[in-house]
Length: 243
Ligand SMILES: Cc1ncc(COP(=O)(O)O)c(C=O)c1O
Image 1 (cartoon, rainbow, N blue to C red):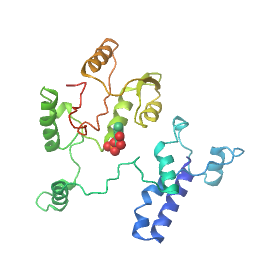
Image 2 (image 1 turned 180 degrees about the vertical axis):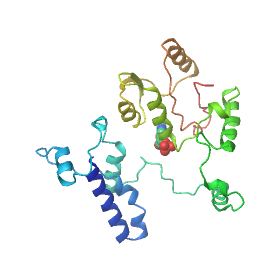
Image 3 (image 1 turned 180 degrees about the horizontal axis):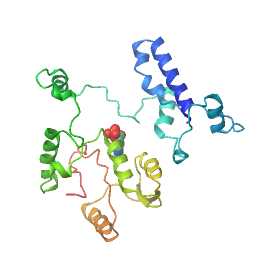
Image 4 (image 1 turned 45 degrees about the vertical axis):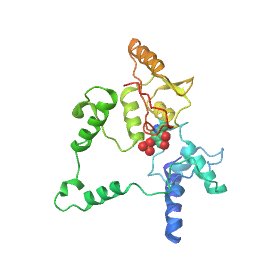
């Protein structure tokens, strides 16, 4: 998508939201993520962009080929056919009471105004200490909160930072299928080549240990996306490579 096209989508989103009801406004997010129609094949994308707005640069070549996203496609489809959209996590219930209370207290505290300021970049000390306590128990060894815990704004940021920090141009990255859609564009953006391995998605401990041993042998790193670690079917337990 060109910068100009992106601007047009955002403008149209704002127009729709500001002329409509609150219900419409809550859909700004969805309108923003629509993909505009591609330019006619006869008009080179960069030429059209530059001609209509010389001040705006076209997007980086490294993003070519990864513009499409399953989210854009399915949000568009959901807007058109209005199904029950199970593809996105929009719960129709409120967050737990204690979470909302803590958030409102933190935002309105007049005694500790620093709660609304920059915090330690790797994570607020209280948060990393709490996380290290939980995960020390879970993995059965002492986790150092200062050197082994990094807090990010969601899993996307964690994955993006990890992949950018570990993958060099030309590296091959094994992606086990089925996989979450963002791994491939992130690997490509880092200059890596995704290599797909279709395997049974649920691993036993011994299988994870075997993969861990292979990683050690070949000086590789296993990146485990465990966003669903606390959501298991009853009677089942989440198994971590790090346990
Ligand atoms: C497997 C998986 N990884 C990562 C993410 C991204 O998580 P976040 O919304 O915390 O960035 C999701 C979100 O649905 C996911 O399902």
